[in-house]
Length: 555
Image (cartoon, rainbow, N blue to C red; front, side, top):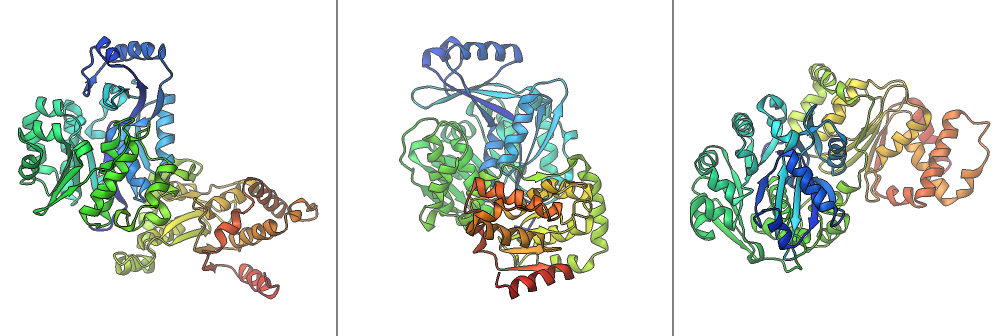
């Protein structure tokens, strides 16, 4: 697949998951059919939530089938974005914040009148899940909310079948499907619900035949679509779709692509909750396809990942889950899992800029600057497909300007994992920083930072999570290099943190305050990160002199 900004972009219902354990009798009391999804209005939702509160405190987490899958792809190391609509309320703020925590770039529009949607998930003792869903603001998502730039920058566009029933959302998906076809973006569809397929069978069949490249269905969904048993359904759907995946629960799964069929054995586990298992299965498959991993290995990883969800209360991978996946035998691992998989959930702040709404202005100026910087653009053209910096971690401490933004995105195009801060508290162009943040690249810079913020931002640019630091540093003035060296010195001799620095400049005093806080939180922070650093490029004469001075002092 051609290199693009995002591996997988999802368009789906931005719904909070409200999860609770109930008895079968409780479902009957609410007139809910076990195992299915029913749409409810705001009044009915309030009634059910009040009833639930009398039994137990529910678990509230960000969700939605498509959103869960996109978060999963991000956990596997993929570059992702999620597009949806939320309310202008505290639940919407929670949803956006949690989406960022999973390393997903959120494109979330806000509805001023409707509340953020939610899916009330009832888990019965047998682990089966039943949904009562109030779509809220997500139901008011329409084709005018989509910009072509987001779609064309995806390698795969993942959709959820739930959206093919609402007339406005159906119109939206037809619009984005045309855009995907225009820009050679593969479309992936999760069928979502068997009864939904029955109600919309003709449209489902037409949409799949005309637009879909990858399809996920469970046994009931495939039967609703074809009227046949799973294997027969697999072959029939494969007549219209490049890759077909049919999930069989405890019986495993089947995958067919290019006339090659793979039968994936199930992973044994104790069923706690089936909610989200299919979403995580899809995440592993999609990221494997982006990485050109063979589908049999991808299926094994997908089955293992889904089993971890089945054995837990939540719908998304935790740090513990990711550690288990990391320790899998090589046949089940993805190529880039080793370093990035634990990082995705650890990053609490992926950017810190003055005003993210300046991103559009910044992007326009970046596009102008690209025409004025032919050297960097020639590098992208010549080496972009080769990825000579693939997965190399690069930290930058350089003026966060429009021109620097072109450099940052060039490094990313060459395959690097980049984090950035400014080298000066006054030099940042806020629209440039906003554009880089909006593009999903961690950046920590704004004009007129305090010195305290300056050192904190530099530290963030050097911290890739999971005890990983940079392998290469782009420095200007030597401050990033200085922070690391002083950090090592402080960890080797903590007494230096308590010395009197009143005769030093304010910037050095704030540096030592920053290092003291880091040491308080992790006494081996810098030692854990120092071994992978292979070199630094220094911009200024002052910085180069500082490096030679440290060399002479054997530091």
